[in-house]
Amino acid sequence: MTIKLGLIGLSEGNGHPFSWSAIFNGYDSEAMELCEFPAIPRYLEKQSWPHDRAVGAEVTTVWTQSLALSRSIASAGKIPTIVENLEDMIGEVDGVLLARDDSDNHLRFAAPFLRVGLPIYIDKPIALSLRSLDSLYELETRPGQIFTCSALRYSQELALSRQDKDNLGELISIEATAPKSWDKYAIHVVEPVLKLLPAGDRISSCSSSSIKPEASGEESRTLTVLWEGGVETRFTTTGIKDTPMLIKLKGTKGSKDLVFTDTFSAFKAALQSFVNGIMGGTIESPRAFNEQVVDLLEKGRS
Image (tube, rainbow, N blue to C red):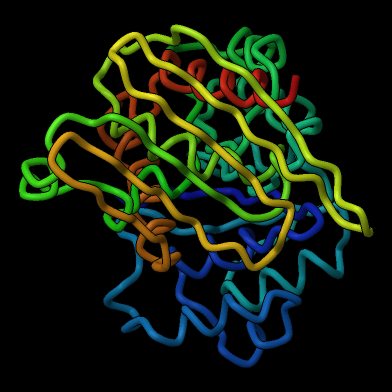
């Protein structure tokens, strides 16, 4: 059985509708070159097609706020059907990719599908407050219907091997840095750092700070958290576009830097996890973890 997916896009500055559809369907190289996100065709062309496609699903339907934009995405990502009304996907697809990162609109776009029981992948950040997150979960008709993540949660580059853990010893501190704004990019380091901490560790204390730029641009924001297990974490978004995704770990025996570079593999792993959950009826995106993530995002905004 091949899962049929509907795709919802596009929010400003977010090329996920193009990249996600390609990861499932393959892509038209000429049409993809015309998209406004030049990094996407560059990392897609490094893959082996169709071998590197995610398996078990195809994106069969697309909706965006603009018919011209929908046609562009459909052409680049080989999506056969364009719908002019969002709800027209219902009855035609087995799951939905809400590929927009404007969290203020997530409830509006997700609600029709949640109410009819369709599984939905909601792009990061799913919400910026626990209250907003609860509003989404209140519409679930069954546990596990909502899937959400930063794809960097699945990055092998931001994970530790057994040898890495032995070389580090007991963790003392983690300093994680991401580019651009807190609201859109902090989640990219929050999620992989949470995976490095002991399961069930809780916040002992936290504080947030921000530095407004002297010139035009986005502010730098930092959230410092002391965990009950004794590890101190510091999450920073620099407000600067070209800052690398970097996690610096310090342990009792050594230190290690983790740098994220492989976008395609992380996206593919996250999308595959969503599809695997649909096929297996499993919960691949636990609510408790998502609540912990959103709680940190909300604390960092205060």
